[in-house]
Length: 234
Image (cartoon, rainbow, N blue to C red; front, side, top):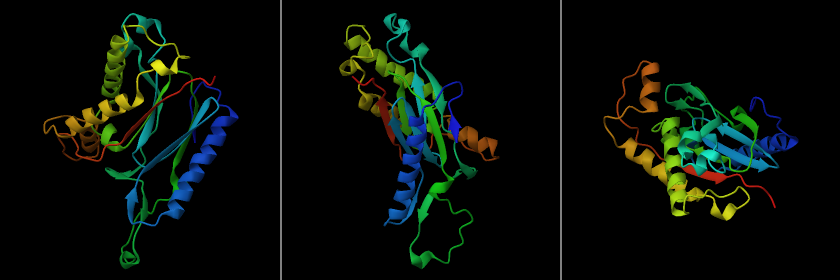
């Protein structure tokens, strides 16, 4: 279990972790279809978030997006930074932890690593108004570096600030926050374009080379992106 260094996570974080781990366990036990999947779940409880992550899906907590002096000066992208993120769980290169359910007809197949919900990593961390929580499959993180993810987020925010006359919304004015679906779509499209670039050097290539494999070009994959703003309760 990991906690954000230097932050005092409340009991809300511990409660959220219990809930997401229980939800992942229930999903595993209740599965009726066959296949394999990675998983990432998050819950906000009070001023803390709990995350359960299994495999190479994951999360990033982005701070510095709105309500800063830099935003007033049109320098939003430079202030964005990732406060914390999940670490991939891999048995080996391109071999992520996964939940799996096989039909009885394949019961004789030897499975060298049978992962369960109990193998997930859990995280708890404090969040603040204007934080942006990003959940994604590896289709995003294998094709875009964190710096590129921040560039895309910053570009969307900057565009919406321009459309709003250059005045950033206060954290209390949630109706004027940049639309999270717009940010998610921009990230998914950027990853999709990169995945089709045959000459691109992407995080997946770097990981392959570190493991002794040759790889060049984007990685075609399913791409899932979920974005949510943290807002203050009235």
